[in-house]
Image 1 (cartoon, rainbow, N blue to C red):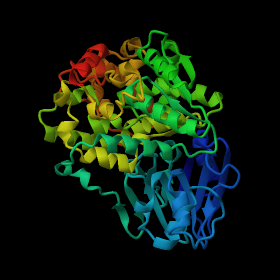
Image 2 (image 1 turned 90 degrees about the vertical axis):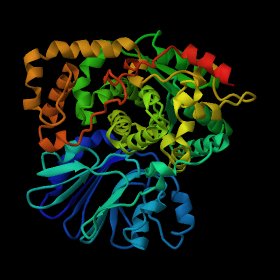
Image 3 (image 1 turned 30 degrees about the vertical axis):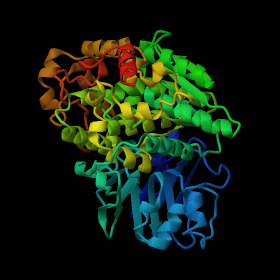
Image 4 (image 1 turned 180 degrees about the horizontal axis):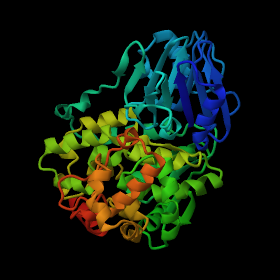
Length: 538
């Protein structure tokens, strides 16, 4: 993965562009390059070398006059080169280069041909196109300065003080001067009424295995973020099997406050079962509190849930890069598409359940995808998310919602995913992990992390400040002292009104306690109760 900056319009010096791009140098610690076109447009790239370590330097020129910069991975690049781009001559072995060649062949209408995650800009003379992947796994921001120049960048901090107006680039869209903003990703499952497919457990299992296999594409060491929950444990199990076929061993990483942390206990059980090269990291609450300011600068959000969960992820990313691993698999997306968060159990009916699944998937770019990308890329670590594969999404989102609802299976969330991998003869996971109840990452590292964070923030914010919160922060007014404290730090780094408007706060539905911790939901019970339920249902 990398960091990209494109400035469309004349007048910005190359020295100024380099300085702006360096604000996200953490995203690309391996090399930097910049190109100014004949028309005066600028493309800059901070590179984290993952595929084609030696010739994949960007910006990359196509066969003719177009140049491009790209952040992400194109998983079907070899297939594209062998088929529809077989008449093109490639300058590199990089997966990224197919983007500029597709533009040269198809103009603006090529994004549906890409299988992967991406944020890119292609410039050809005065023509250009910027695009973002369907779900928004990779970040992108865009804005306009006082002279009318357009800016596109992987992180908001690069352009916030340059632009009069800016916002997050919407997932599943492309933008050009000729077309404006165009949605290219329009799956029929955006309509909740198409979720009528019968449950196919074999299809679920095979599609997730296929999605994971794609994401093992790398020329550098690979690991997995293993919390011991269902999602990360399944990706670990699948990856272990696939890497074993290649004679390789998977590195797994977990984090917690101490040896009694729920995630560390479960992760160790999974690692022992799978035989991974397992690494544990312990962090103190003081360490977590100390990095909040820096973390918010990296994350560019004031969403409470994101900050809570990103703290251990950020600390763990440092350990992983120090261990020499540059790519990790992560479990983002499963809870949104499958209704795995505990509040989903309170959905009034199947229609509302499915609507919420669709809404949460569509908003992943503002929450878990943002957290996973920026927490890891703060240390030049790339996180890949198999659950957000387009084909797997299609399978899950078109399955009847009643098959995903916890009440269908006596309260067990994500039952169909668990059952799809419940292979008795050749088990993917220990039963106690396969049927472990959902623990949100910020809870699983140790319950005292969130409890102490709330207390710490409360000590920093007065009652008077809370009373005036609606005056100081009229947009997304903080309703707790924790939210106020986090918002204060965010505003220090990003004082612009447009910055505040890029953030969407997450508040769980259908429950009285609106705290985003999973423990706030009445359905939070001991995992061993769920295991007992499973045995009755089996």
